[in-house]
Image 1: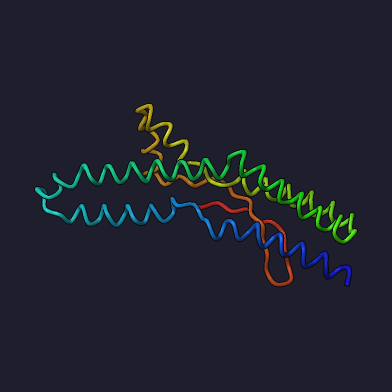
Image 2: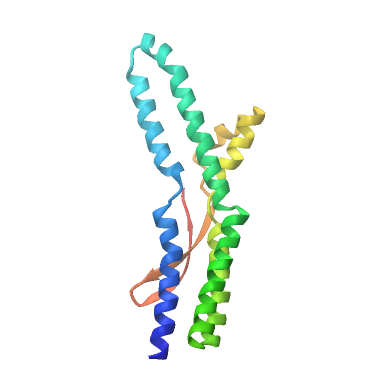
Length: 172
């Protein structure tokens, strides 16, 4: 019975942590598809229509760029980092004060803080960097995007039936 309490609280807190990334993924992934579709429609327009639509397309692209950079910056902000720590303190307090499972409380607290901070630290933030280049007029970064350089390394939790751990991934 005591172990079930630990398992339920631990798995529940882990599920909440993973759910935050699933419920609120970075908008840049969806925005990239939206912008690609708009660019494809733009390319199919006659040249006279392109002249009229060019400014609107640029405005939309810049709006998405700013929004995506703000989203990535928030995902690595102190508010998110402290929120993760406070959440894990709450889970530890529930196990410790609520059920007198101080050993499991300390394990959950430490593991939760470490895993949460690693997940936050390994979130992509390329759009924030790209926006800084764009604002200074340094557009050389766009050439590196066109070369298809691999993305950043990402560390994420790995959960499957009967096993768990971490996975190291890189998109290219």
